[in-house]
Length: 398
Image 1 (cartoon, rainbow, N blue to C red):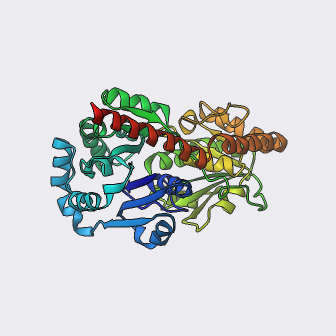
Image 2 (image 1 turned 45 degrees about the vertical axis):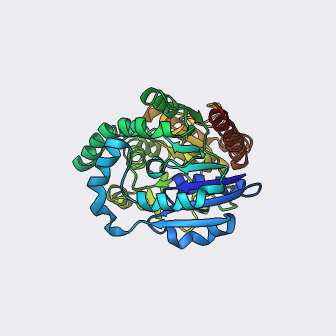
Image 3 (image 1 turned 90 degrees about the horizontal axis):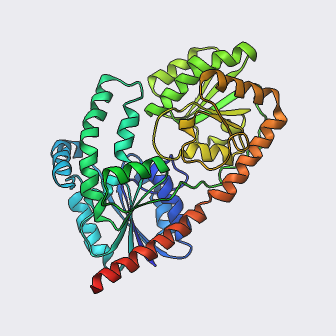
């Protein structure tokens, strides 16, 4: 097949997550059997990673997002709300796709915003959403945030359902990565055909690194400027860690990740908290911990950080919010806690019982290898592409 991939951030590997990570892994596997043509917006430092995309794609068209583009944001938001057609980058995207997509068999679009600026070209289209925008707003409003952030998500919560109802039905299929998001999209957009395709993880890249374990160290890795991750870090540092240290003196909470916000950097002054920010390779730091802890309560989608931790063969303790959409059995592949006391009990038990921790860690690694390979995700999308192509062909014959 000739597959056109349209993305609102440049897919490449390794990357920080989201559309870059998901799209990059799909491209890497699909390119082994198909011809991939990429059209992508360039944001942040995406332009520095174009060599990766060019190695895997038959063609690459990029659409830079200039800094001055923010001046159009209010008008773009209005057109997005009224017609589901944002103005920003829409004209450049339309030119690119009308020129490039003539011989594509199917179009795969990464991201709801990208879906809004894709023109109505005569081709079968799949929109990869990852999560429900409406549900994401609901979850973000549960997190402690500034007044400005709260106002932003309240306004976005008014906009998202309408935008979704206007945009999603333009696609033969939409996909999300977790069951709560599937239910939310079906509720908000009844006319949308949506499928569940969970995240994968690269178990060849994320593997148990042979490093010395740091005694009594509990580790968590994430984007440390994102509200649900900030909330999780503060929850553990403020509430759970003191309960652990009362029973395991000298226990350390090691935060590993990108762009820590002010509330996170303040934690570094505390006894028992360590922060490693913006590491070129986070795997040795994560693998040096004895227990992986994820106190996330809110958020959407399946958490890729959990798959990565399991692939690195870490024993995991998490709240239910961290484990949404994750296959496996509590007690066999990970431990689930309902409250801070139970969380601390699980952590202490794993520190005191290294053999049990090892069994949990090995079972988690086996689960990822069996259920969450990117090759299996690519195969699911191949079947989906064939289905939507046939459906479109049948409709054209009527």
